[in-house]
Length: 303
Image (cartoon, rainbow, N blue to C red; front, side, top):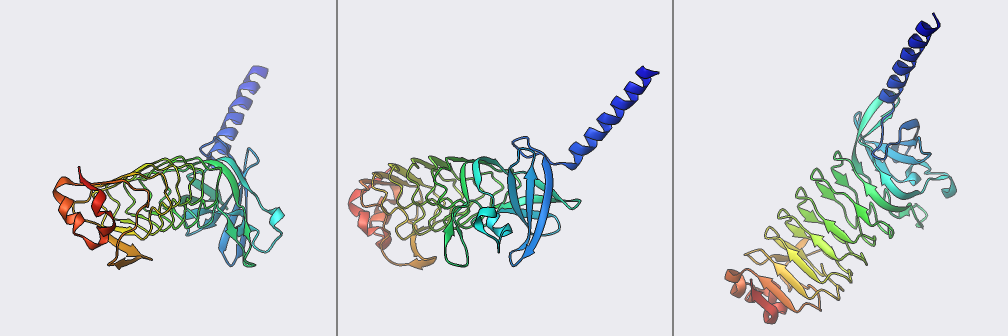
């Protein structure tokens, strides 16, 4: 009799725990969702999620089925800054958020989500001391200044589902290398500027525009390859990259210059330290005779 009761009790416990696991999403770091709280403010519906390792994450509900990660300051919009949560160390963004009985797919990293946050008193507050970020494949958008000034951020995975990486999204971070997925067509203004440890960049053959100051002030870049797909290069895209000696420009037709998002008929300014500019062998004379490339006539070499 006792043995039968034990079997029944064990079965009930297994069913109970299985039900709990089903209701509590697990983030990539293996932490289950414990509870959620929401607030309504001028920024929309913001949800604070508490996980089993006592960490928190904040989300803005975008629709009935989707959400994006936001800064803790979005939740504590009218409260003292000390009541907020600071992202630290390795952060694993979950694929979904379960809140009030509904599932929301995490599709974006919002503007300023992990980076410095500008409040309405014109003061900047640090939003994180994150060192590594693991993103799910559901992320399609990384917002403007999403990781701006995250000086300790050295690693992040960028999936082929990404369609947008915003203005200054990774500016002044600690990234050492970057591989942009082939779903991206534009490197936005200041996107990877001021990354003091960035020494390797790989761009896909889908990039059409490298915008103004996109890779400026990266002192460890020594070589750079511009994909054949590029049609426009922004003003001073590589300004103050003082170690940049060699560049491979793969487009057969010389890219045009842009300034603040507009086409410009003026010389493209790359890096003052550039010593050799390799272009397709059949395009050497075309580059040398193009007004946009006149500053580099003497160093253009066929490759």
